[in-house]
Length: 444
Ligand code: FCB
Image 1: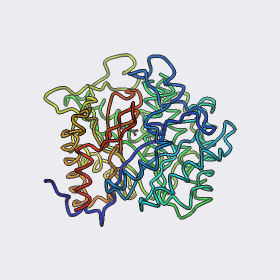
Image 2: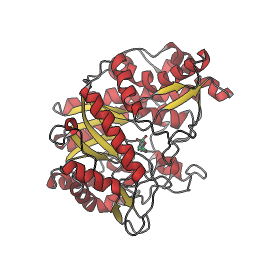
Image 3: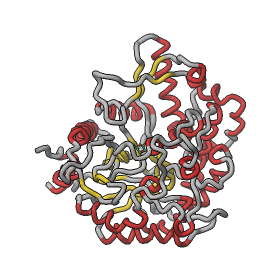
């Protein structure tokens, strides 16, 4: 039976599980909730692999009390979730009391079970009525107002708050590749969206601190580890471009640094969207940074015209590489390499691994789910975390993605990341072997 490295013992290291609002809550029109861009995106034919949506999802909105009990039973003392902006505000960006009450009830339940909340303010479910979305500078100011609202109503109950989850996905999957909401495909615009997201982060931190100075504040990123397919100079350059887009585009502003020239060239005349003084707003002091890590990428010199605009083409991993069910390479060493790569370039605050996990679609058999691949995946990544800490990295916690199977964005319900199985017809939750393994590890 595996054991936890002494450096990861729950007495000195924070263990949690993670979810996000759109992926689990359902109740998409309940109590005055307004549509998010993911509600409207799901309604467009062909956007979601299994033509599903988030209208019911895990029905967590109605079942949160049982779900919190389950988190406690599994032995977690920390829970990362996100607050749905379109649930707690009206179409005028005013408070929706009923929506806010849901999060108060959730916090009460967590409190009753001795579980510390770790909240993210934006995990992609942008209110659909905000015209232009992240392409409109005003959205950053609306985010600051929303942030202030949360700080006023929940701030004294939230010890740690992240502004954004993986802004790279909102910017580039949403506005360049167009596979995420809002489904735009425009390279220069995706860079404008990236800038407005980071501006929102900075304005949000200012707004929160003006209300609640005590909260530990940060952001959750998914930095890239991108290896070149070959050592040909054009492939090496392509891999660097991919990393600049994924890392420098977000980390540089956080520390008041300008983007690399290659990104400035790609944004072209839309660079006018980046105004004097913006960089100083983005670079607010950070109390922590959350890192999400799943896999690495391999890049080669661009092969299509669209790829030429971005400067790289990703090469899908194939056998003999080990893959999870979603097709992502299992590459635990990448976690160490990503952290070391970031440490070498930016003055990082304390780190939390805010997401890590695997799509293992093993189903129920005789009332149990034997997700051995996920167990191996998790244990291999715990080892990397322990190794990093041993070598001096300031990593304070680890959150497994995800508490339960849920709506996996453009993949719909076809990919299962949960350590708890969800039957989406009956909403029955069944802890998988990975959940029972974690329960045992955390108890010892
Ligand atoms: C991350 C997202 C999370 C989940 C996992 C699998 O990029 O933050 O919501 O979808 O991937």
